[in-house]
Image 1 (cartoon, rainbow, N blue to C red):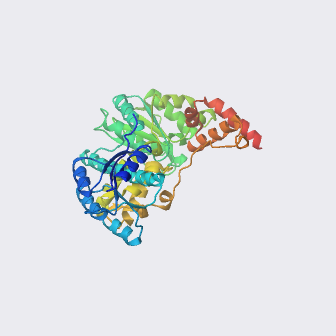
Image 2: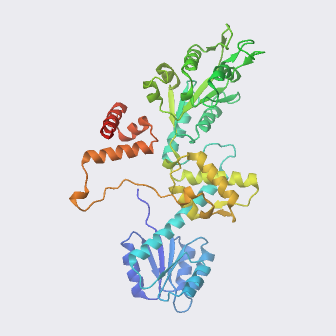
Image 3: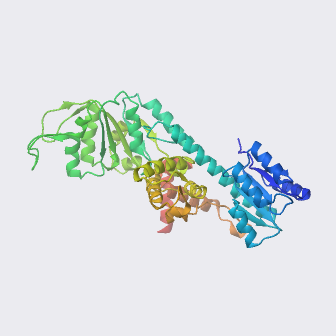
Length: 457
């Protein structure tokens, strides 16, 4: 279903101009209602919802500036676009002070006016989205960790609901910063093990020499400095959940021991000849392409199949639509409460930038951005000036096929090459993800990439 056309109320004492606006803007995707006096406009504003109010400045009786003031009182936040043949600086300033969103001078091109109205309608839509998200957050239980309403996240939530009661191992995949530990926590909280321990281990953060001892524990005298025995993290998670983050970083030697532990459900501390049974649900996560790691011999295939009994893939933030604003508002409220700053929302122009930015660092980068914005905010809403340069100055890149002359076109093979390389870049070099997006098997993608690499050598 397509979105409803933006609804515009146009006010002009000239009936002919009302007809021009109704026909011209109607052809450009607007639903236009017209009236010939400010009093009629105020009555309609009180009874109906509009995306934009468009008014002439010079009208008999109540003029456009007075109408701006009345409209803002009746419909706070409604953008007002003023048109006039008297394009003086004084009249522009007066209109803006009265609450006008934009100012267009006669004579004008309908296309230019339509662009201004589209901007104003987008402002209204963003403001409504922000208000709706604020209400949803206010109604949401405080203990809820994960947020999201996009189709991609609804699929994740459905997967989690079907997975939570299972005892099998789960592999969570996704780019860095997408919130994989939150997914593991959600699985734990929804499982029968929720009253027991949740133990998280970052496999990339521990030195290889210590990793085995940390996971499995060690006996007294197992190595220099081991003056007493130590319980490993697997045993500490007894009855609960063990979350192994960045499992793709595990050394091969530890992979072998972990595989045996998962298969036999027993562990042997370093330096001990005693095996101990354990009862732990194991959840793992990675931002690596484990299929490629298996093919390259960096990750054991038998361990991969053991941990990937059930899989949950987290989408990057750039694919989650308005979830960006929902997460931003949630973190804004949390940060403002912690720092005791009276910041309560996000201005529509700032929201538009947050929504359009690509977020290579995903939710983690968004949180850092909002914390910075709250710290710099001078008003009760985050504005465009409060955002980092990387977000404020971001311009989206698109793959376009535009040409007029036959000499400007390229061969289909070249188009394929450019597109595949663009998808691979968007997937941050993850060939399995790129192949899935492109509808290719991974070996076909590798063969094409090898061919193009040979052409450049």
